[in-house]
Amino acid sequence: MLAVSLSAVAACDGAGSSPPTVEVTSDQLKPGGVFITYVNGCEKGCDQLGRGDLVLELNGQPVSTAKDLRVSQIATGQPVKLKVQKKGGQVVEVEIVATPSEKLPPIKEAPPFWSVGAAELDKAPLWARRNLYGHASLMAMLVNMDGGITDGRQLVGKKRLMLFWDWATREEQAQAANMLRVLQMARDDLQNSGVEIMFTHIQFPSNTRVAPMNDSGLRQWQKTSGLPDKGTLPTYRFPNATEYQPSRELGLEGATTYQQYLRQPPAIVLLDEDGIVRWHSEGIQTPPAGDELAGKGKDDQWTIIQAIEFAKKEL
Image (cartoon, rainbow, N blue to C red; front, side, top):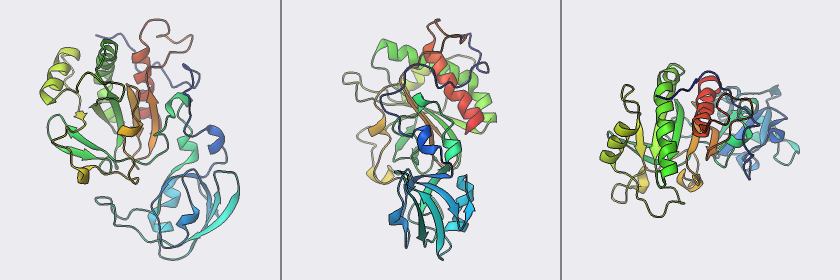
């Protein structure tokens, strides 16, 4: 059993090295307001909005969370005035006319744009702001090991901790096994916080020689790699060529898929209840000096613990 204290570690911006690119910086979010993640479109005015814009006011009233811009307030069929800071810094007034969209089933009454409070989005450490960060749930078709298919739209409505892992090398196999055990130990705490685990096995682009496991292989791998008294995790995989159906690969955003942004295993994605990606990290981070796991060769455990603590406290 792993000697890991899940409650002792908190997220830290200073851990490890910053990624080559940070999708959304704190400077971009500093003005506050509500960050637009993706524009669905509307009858008038939505062409003046874009991802990265900050909505500062609605009809003259300051806004700070997505709840301040709920559908019943901005999709009334009547003109609505938004004060918006554009990604380049210019502050403009935009008038939109929108009605709830029914074009994204099973999502009912979709808003003219997906959004998240700037202050809420700004909580993730820099190393967890890779390319998916700040997007609305992308297109996916995930097959449950025990049956059933989940797409990117069905992820909305519940907080999610999604771990995408591969097993191409012995190092990756060891990392996946260690993270599996940590998640098994944290499952009850996550469930009590309303967070669902999605332990997802995929073949990353860097893996050109080892095929992904099938359902039987995944069950056997969990049996031999996990903690025997903790049971298996909700486990998913990407569909094989026979199973794949383009019509089942759905998301909240256009034609963008999860897989095209998953480059380095293991990748951790945290979604809030609105389907907004609030964390996207790739690879293993080094614990900061002074942390209880620093220098103990447990960097993979430290990395997943950061995501667990964030999911419990910040989603």
